[in-house]
Amino acid sequence: MTTENRTRRRADALTQQRIVEAAIKILDQDGEDALTFRALAAHLATGSGALYWHVADKQTLLAQATDQIVAAALHEAATRPQPQNAIRALALGVFDAIDAHPWVGAQLARDPWQYAVLRILEGVGVQVQAMGVPEPAQFNAATAILSFILGLAGQYATRPQAALEGVDRAAVLENVAAKWAQLDAAQHPFVRQVAAMLSGHDDREQFLAGIDFILAGIVQNTIVS
Amino acid sequence: MTTENRTRRRADALTQQRIVEAAIKILDQDGEDALTFRALAAHLATGSGALYWHVADKQTLLAQATDQIVAAALHEAATRPQPQNAIRALALGVFDAIDAHPWVGAQLARDPWQYAVLRILEGVGVQVQAMGVPEPAQFNAATAILSFILGLAGQYATRPQAALEGVDRAAVLENVAAKWAQLDAAQHPFVRQVAAMLSGHDDREQFLAGIDFILAGIVQNTIVS
DNA sequence: ACCTGAACACCGTTCAAGT
DNA sequence: ACCTGAACACCGTTCAAGT
Image (cartoon, rainbow over all chains, first blue to last red):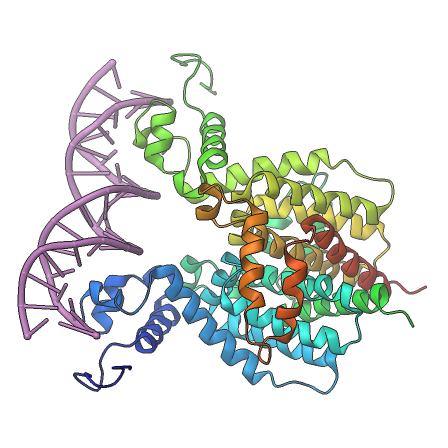
């Protein structure tokens, strides 16, 4: 009943998968703004309209590209023996994926109902169950971790401009720290104080500290011992 | 030295503040996609180019509009006696602001270095200090809460399409729950299970549960007793 | 069934020209 | 100093026409 691979014209025929791969390549190399259907068509040596035969629209294409990266990241973060360690590995996997592909962070923060987000929730949720969190609290526990991960995703996705101009994250942080240090001390005492810590801090460690706060809180608030 | 109010032509002259107010009005009424400089100019009975005399660009305008809403929300969430309650009130203030203005959620999740985000961090940070968290841990504690709030901001910002079509959040959740319930049980056991809870749950309560997890974790992991 | 590429209906932003 | 509005350089998406 299917005509799937009966009428292939050439080996490199357009495919949803090939389009997604080309999109990832453009996103990684030139940033989110560089992904246009015209650039994509040029990259694949085809017309811009041809792409619409294989992908629904740009939003879907971005979601598919993001899902591909996230799926690989979660797959690599193989399950650890202890559920809490599994959650840490999983979260760090997403973190590292965003680090390598900043546009993934932006996309994850943008659409909560895309499949990549569901993947993360599923991975976290199963481990929350394994932690022994009672069923009524599992939803709140898993989504709290998810929210934290997505929140960081948005924060860590460096603005495209900065990335393109070759400004790395350290320079961005240095710049922000300098601005924060000049804030009015009466109005912004806390931010002024932590400005000093900003340029020297480790994003990964900070991320893990947040995960550990939530894990400790989940254990304390939901697991009766 | 200043010529500020010497050459005003008419009472309703263009002003950054007036432009921001008009932008908020459009964003609230017709959603994020409806905010264009052409629509804004028409709304203010001026030319689109005139706006650029008062605002730098669209990104800045959105940041200013967001800051206005967030500032009001934080101001209303007057400081509570107990630092933990102050943090809850503050977080709920932001939550309710996003509930009333979904575009604020999208914008908060989009740019971590905008002033509105700094405002939230400052508010949270001061209360973290008041909780007695030792100085080296204050940064991680405050940013963990911030990440969680921003993560939820992105998740809660309903897609503009849905909002415009008059589909409310309950209907969106119902729809997602139905999709989740049809997922493969072997591959998505957790999401399938929580699908049933999705349509009946209270976003606000879920949000507060997350905040409480983090607060409990902060107390346990950083405060020696 | 799949591809082409011009055309449509928009954008944000700039800028010469006005008052 | 501030405003006008046409023009520029783009977009995503559609669609008649091809193979």
